[in-house]
Length: 236
Image (cartoon, rainbow, N blue to C red; front, side, top):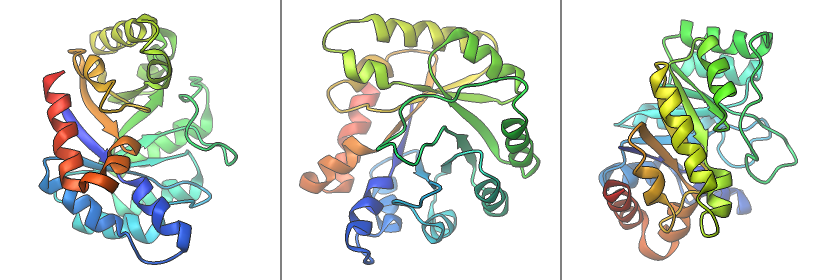
């Protein structure tokens, strides 16, 4: 199981004062020292946290792999094709949302999404689609020709204390995706308390976790926060 650490909210703290600290590049380096298998950042249209310069610097400094989350927006897709991160994860994006509220609504005939996928793949970038754990949506993802999907774990994160329904949904979705040849990733709302049942799903090979790690890093430091999450993921 790979752990990719999302460092968006290191930049959120920086942007609260529009200063130069804390530095996402330093946060990424600390996460890698602690065993992170990759670094994830989301370059949003409104640039609310991560900035273009951050992604450029991270592309030079990250020693593992860089996973760039982005909407299917022409300027950001062009930016990604120039930068060539290892992976681009296409996500839905609304300016008014606090955080990503759900997965992409996939349609096989979506020209903008197909165009973004084609541009990224032509640049040699591995493409993943961030989607809800719906079997029909997974089938459309396969039709779109991507090698990987990331399952949105938000419903599980909201309900795991009360019911196993969302966990079972993730299990079925992951098994179906793997069966039809897709690599399976997962993320959103995963914490030190709830990550292990998701990490235990055998078809999931990568988790993207950010907010919980950055929150604990305030008290423990980034390296210790990543080490503890890595340990939880490994015990899944």
